[in-house]
Image (tube, rainbow, N blue to C red; front, side, top):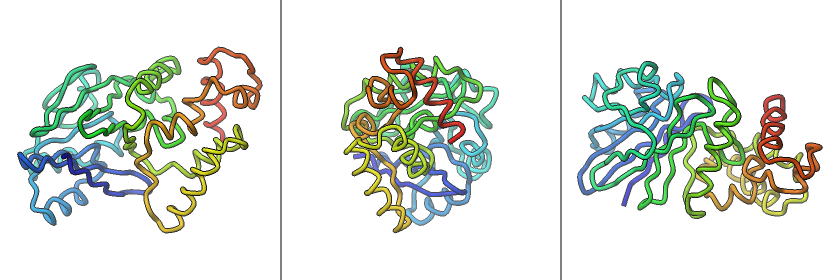
Length: 254
């Protein structure tokens, strides 16, 4: 079984350490900083084998070069982002696979937040490491991708099993949920989710991971067919992409 550790860093980032106990191999997903990773590796007597980057932003690759220099790890990232990911050793594309010992991850291209964004899906572990494409009750804002790309990327992720655990890269949940409640205040699943979130955050605990089933019930960006949500944005009966575009614009100024 894949061991997953969640390291909170900076204001709201999460770095993930993935460890295959059979082989002893370890990967860091989107290391914003090197030292927290090095500290945890030392604490557990693990050796860093890989870095899996989802995209090129500094709060996802900031620790790359120091970690590579200190551990000799291999850095894996998107072919489309090879010129923007520091220290990249192996380029991957949509539907490629990467190995972490006995664990296999499928690479899924999810452009939108950035043009080269990818995610890593470990089917056997029921875990998706989705960077800034999908958040708990939210999605990434646009940088150099397009709204159509982001919409299609989220459509692709919705085809994964409903039990898939969603390991996103930021603790944005409470703000995302407040926005969602302005659109669907009568959504019981959303009300219950936000009550749980309030309890967790009061204890300074993580709200991540979520599950895809929870996201389908509460995340407005995955619920563009909701009549209540369409009415809330003034697009009742509207095309899903048009509704999604309006939602993203509203969230940008929320």
